[in-house]
Length: 288
Image (cartoon, rainbow, N blue to C red; front, side, top):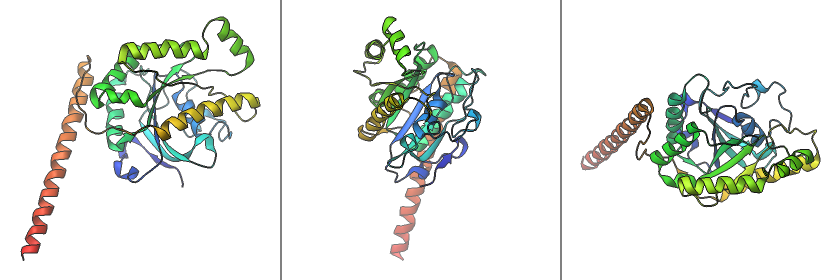
């Protein structure tokens, strides 16, 4: 099946109706490597499809400026670019955007997710070299939980990017007590205390690998992506339907989300009216 790119302005839930492939949504702070992670998942880097990072399937930035301006979904992709099971991946603009567009970005992200309808896995990205829960990311997670319900966290995974697999990097992490086990313990404790989430899965990804790298490093990447794949394919689907509540301390964002909520209510009312008219017309036709 050919890839289908659906941009923010014309995302339609109908485009995804009847699909059976899992949906993976990638979120995180600007500069953490979201687009590079998306390219890793779909195999753009391993296959060496495009040397210019701005022209890959998901354009990447070499600086702190976000290259992703809109939430977009790409379906019909295969894991690591290999033939086999397909999935849909959603790339989102970075939080803490250098142009101050967080309010716009979060509102459009929620709009897109409600149109797509469901997500299997939310990959929350952190820079493995300096992992932290930024204020913007914390706020966004709380907004997601407020809008869609706390069940959102049951479909979430922590993904640590910039996580080199070479022996030197492993020795350095062991000396500084920042190994996979250390990070997993730290973040699982954080998510338990902050969001009452037990044992959130933690993944460690090196986005810089290509097909010329060490076999063991490539195998490590395949193993980590395999965990994401298994999680996305086996977890119950999370429904991103109606916005339940708007809980945010930011007035502009609250205003934007309240507007989106009113739009959803109007759309539901219009759909109900259309169904009522259709039933009424059908009844009148039968009487004739």
